[in-house]
Length: 95
Image 1: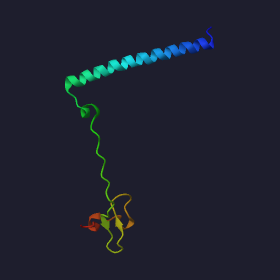
Image 2: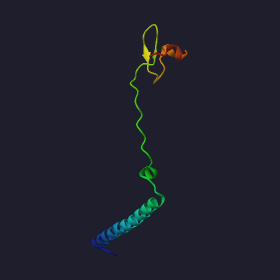
Image 3: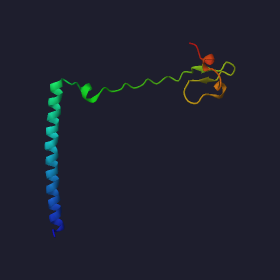
Image 4: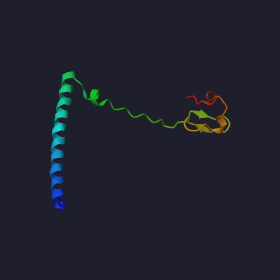
C-alpha cells in the first residue's frame, strides 16, 4: 500500500496532467470556434445574442383619479376599492 506522501505526490502529478489536458482541449475548441465564426462571418451579436434594453420605468404618474375624493391609481398593483367592479376608463386621467 502507498504511503500518504506518495499519494499526495501522485495527486499533484495528476492535477498537473488534468490542467494540461484541459488547456489543450480548450485551445482546440477555441480554434474550432474561431474557424467556424470566420467561415460563416458571424458577428458578436450572432454568437452571443443582443443585450436586451432595460425597460423604461414609468414615472408612476397617476392614470386613474376618483372624481369625488381625488384618490389616484397608477395602474399597477391591486385595484383600489373605489375602482373595483367599475370600468376604469371612466376614471382615466386625460392629459
